[in-house]
Image (cartoon, rainbow, N blue to C red):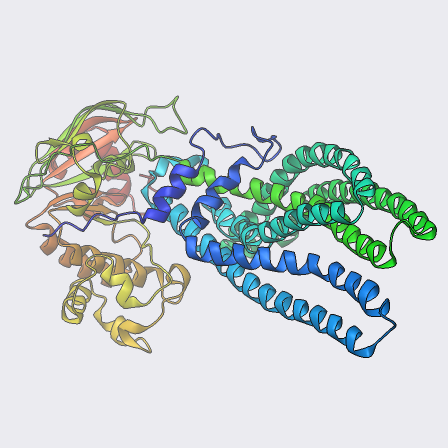
Length: 622
């Protein structure tokens, strides 16, 4: 069997992970972020930096459009001072209007180029961030998702990236344009009326101070607002995914109330955010335009006394308005940047998360050809989310190559934990697990999983075609191999009868086919895997009696040359196992054949008695 090629992260994704703050701890929705600045946006800028040509063209277009905008007041000054002052000659007036029209043409073309480039960058950056986050999520171990809801994470991948796209595609461009116009306009104002301009500059700190103070508060509220939006997405996904249960128990009203409460909390947070932004914008605009009005008053008195020409004061008024508008817009733009920083920080958390299960620096190669031996040696394991309870306690079990071992016991005995550890989804706190003599902690997890085929209790299917769901076991499998595996799993007939055969779309979670059919596809997928170790988590639980017999026969043929671990809930399915291991409380309490254990009078004998001797009695759950 060929090992799969290791998945390499693209340079963009790798750089994004480096740009993300590794020390950024996840904050709760009501918690202020540790950083109250625009620092988290460096991840966004790192992504944009991979396209220097686009950034350069966008920057040039931005400068051209800003300068063209500032050239408009100069055009009006020439029209007034040279066109009208020359006696109102139509030719002179027309010449200066032609100059003004040329500026407008340059402004229009530059704006179009700027819009295209920054919009392209916004979409591309968001795509790269999503790719980087997704690649990192695929590397994380299941323990991460015990404390972080996948539904909330999916909201970050949509709502937060949409905000980042707005920041890159619009906000940053607008901010830079306003900065250029504010600086360039101020320089031009000095050439027109130095004394009036000095008065204008003196008022700038009065604008900046409230901008910073409001911005700090706004960032905290923006972060909370994004968390509230994520709550809505997570709740919607949860309820719609369990809609049949909701309706079966007549809980529509309760779920509607729960959703309404979540929406109202989101709205309340949004009101706080927009209130802060509204007050900040009002204060800044009042200060800026108030100062401009006072300066214009002085300028008008200068025109009245003849100290300033009419064209100069006209250019000063227009340029002053542009400068004031730029400073005023910076208040609103800063609010968008702060909101974008909040979204970027949430995405940075996902990018900077490191898997608890990772390949060692120098992984030990597994023996080739594989033998299929699996050994648990004095293993103690506690789930990270339940550290007070030992799922396995000083557990020792060796499964020889080709042996079929059934694992039985009450719920919570630790049966499923064995499968989780065998595939190295977790590492034990004590003891060693070996595959063909190699400790799992010394091997590459991808190599370990390549040698294991899993059939879960509930057949997990993807929103894809039957062909792609089958090929998950062996992606390069031919149609002939797919049909052969389907035939072995008793799935051939229903797959052939589907409207488009193997190309039929099965719906989300395989909703268009029955539970038994989903399970048979999962079994066929494991058959295609052709791995030396087979893990069966009650693989026939969703089948009817007739299908169960056929599939059980197929599984027995499949198990003949493989090491097999079977989690058994119905003891009838494991009576022919080479060995039955009975677990309780994370320990082995007895093991042996069905006949020997049935005569021993222990836990297995009691469970067997409930299931075989008293059909009317409800057996204890296993």
